[in-house]
Length: 117
Length: 111
Image 1 (cartoon, rainbow over the protein chains, first blue to last red):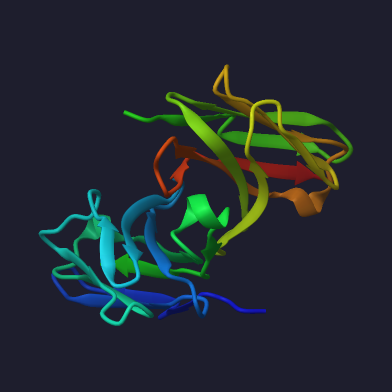
Image 2: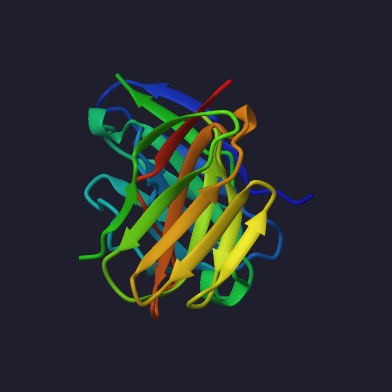
């Protein structure tokens, strides 16, 4: 069964360091989402891509976070510099077509857990 | 501002008992999702509710949606230990294309 692949699964870094997360969506899925889930809370959308274009990044802290999906396939989420409050699970999700409304559901990866010391 | 609130936040129940988790949202939505999350794991889709009055059942779980009341319920029948997890509801705003998640309900089923 096709899955959304994410790496690394776990990352420990020190404050002010740079960190990057990678996501490979299910083959053929045009829409890709990055969510952040702080421990004990529900996931919150950071950025949504349609192919290689950003559709929604209104909740992305752009002073330190960046996301790209250069060829419209895999995606990278970067944090520089990392802060203590960035400790969270970073979840990637994908869907075919034009996203959730057309496809009906999102397919989530296993997530990348970040701990900032 | 959209708010999606779940009640209760924590639920401890004995095996064999019934209980309901509530999900209230503050603005118009035309679809609602329920997810399950085990500790340290990703999200598992349980139900998609697409219209007012929708009811779906899978095993010991049943979900319903009342769009007029902006309320969804997840009913647990005769709980078993394997149902212990955190349950999230998530709404899709009318015209939007992503999920807004609730606060989550951490369920613990005690033998």
